[in-house]
Length: 386
Image: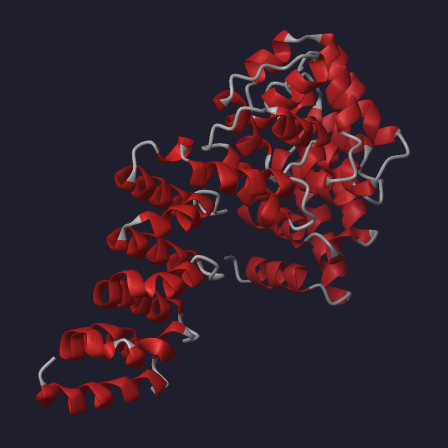
């Protein structure tokens, strides 16, 4: 940079303390144009800025101005909490090039964000088409295998994502992790195992694999053993693992299997599991179950009543009106604003017979007198003819 610009660059750098993030975002670019490589020390505060766009801009400018000298700062950017900054760091490392960027980028290929992973893979391939079989990639993969059981789910997911693109010889660690049924990394584990040519050796492994990639046709093709395995997996303490197993159970939609899933609702099981099963039965289109009857059956259930009432009022069956009103007057209105509003709209629109309208009107009057705001609003709109 010309000496005449140095004073101007320092003046611009002071704007990094401006209260406006919009102003601070422009500073790294301005400094790069004004001072060139001499702007590098002036960019230091921007790397610590509270605004992600400022940090991302600083990393990009550092790579342009410093080249390999900026690698340490760029690698630090790969650990930023914001996806935008990590993505900028990956792209900036790509402009620097060289062997030093390989290990950090292989690790970035395991990022929890798909865009960051894709950018890292693109840079790695451009830098060395055979990167995945390099010694550096093997070292990163070895560390990733150790992290598959880490207590931090982010570490586990990053490890599985790395192993999904680095073809180590032994599928054992990934198969063991899949057997644990970790919901956070099933998809990556399945991709990694496929990369190694691994195939399930028993029904449980096959079920876990098909649940991970949601290959419902293959799951159903396993027949009764798959259903039994999903029933067992549905009791897993981890909700995400449990949810996948419930999705699998609902692929067996005939009445006999659906009845066995419904039976779970009457067992002494975790309340969260009961809600997951109940919602699954209501939402699965191909399951042979009478949803309205299921909701009537559980409208008095403390854990499931709110889901049942919501479904019944949406169905609009006049025969369920008394049960829905009893539910609301029994305390359900405090939990289920949606049901109060839907019932009030039925009254206001006039698409109910006079007897039903009178029942709803009395219900809304009672709820409004109890301080229910939705019911009060419905009464007010109805009285105005709106």
